[in-house]
Image: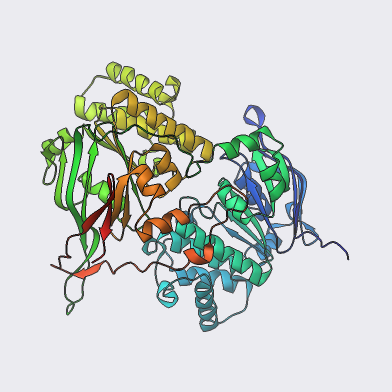
Length: 580
């Protein structure tokens, strides 16, 4: 029996950027073959050339970047030599692509239905009603809840997981032979990640699509790949079957990449801090958002956070975990007084609720926040000196020479060179930008730092470096962290205690090892079962995870007050919510 021909063949591909002194080879001599119905994963860290290689296949390399050598063969044609009109005919029709960030890939001015229909009508002669029917059917195929309603919504009205489903639906509308997925699950919750991966697997089987999956998550590679290509700084370090790469990795870089992946159950023990004084006390914190209503509708509100209580001690890291929409980030913003809330938040005994103006500014010396997206948190028009030194100017009114000296010390603390002071945010990698955010948070010597998903989108080795940095700063400065995350392996590595949030409430809280290794609440067990493991034979039960929990409807009539959450002790420093 003749061996099948590959759907895609990349032969000795090289990609260059710039010219003259600025010339640089960013991908060098890359070769691989992808066969029908198979999945090939390209794994590696940021800057390895993964995404540029995928853009070269689609003919979408940015201005100033070019494929200087090699060939990309698809269906007997070299895509590098096809004219642009022929490439446009292939894109979306026979080659689909799921981009890394759906919010920037979807047009914010068009509804979901308009964007799907535009893709469909470009390649097929369909009327308006036929196109709408096909779009709705594809949204239903990607398990989009209330598909008909979503067609009329805009991207900003959808959650991250829903936007990613829209991107998959758009890529699969014309049933392409080849689907390229560039980091399709980066920064998604583990359960939503499992749903997206299972969805891609089902669509692949249904349409016999070849899948080129680009990722830095070795757990995802272990679950999805048939073949693996490992890239590092533009070069292919290793290529082979999943079994070969995971059981007998030949390249030192591959071994290093796999060793950097945090694996649940391998974290070192941490000291007990139960005797330390309480720095931050949160009691019955609730956040509600009023909904707009029609003339004859009763006023309603979204109960985003309901009756949350916990304590954070000196030098302690408390992990706040849960899926998107559970209220983690809202809790952090409320503690920072960025949102109106009910309840009590005390910092060193001082009540924060109701503070305004100068009183609030004085308190913010002692409590700072590191946000999830460092690029969005840093003004692209300001230099590092201006950004990191801004708190010193606002709070201490330091003269420029003193600020420069202080910013230089802060950069050294987060392992960045002093010369970085004159650069702009776009000149740094994601991990370096996160270090800048940490340096800015440290500028006023705070007592508490709220880290909101601060490492969720970083490569595993960069993530490990940032976690080591946070831990070193905690011990050197006696910091206390509220560490908001959905990554249970990361939480295990850095946190002393863990609080699990579900539908706006804390359902389980206690010592790290108690909560993560003896979970009592069914939602905690589901979260832990969804953690991907970079090991063969340890694939998640996708079907089980697709049995969605049905959280209570957060929309209530105005004035409704739910009963307080009650807890029962289930061990030493371990409490679980009692179901009403």
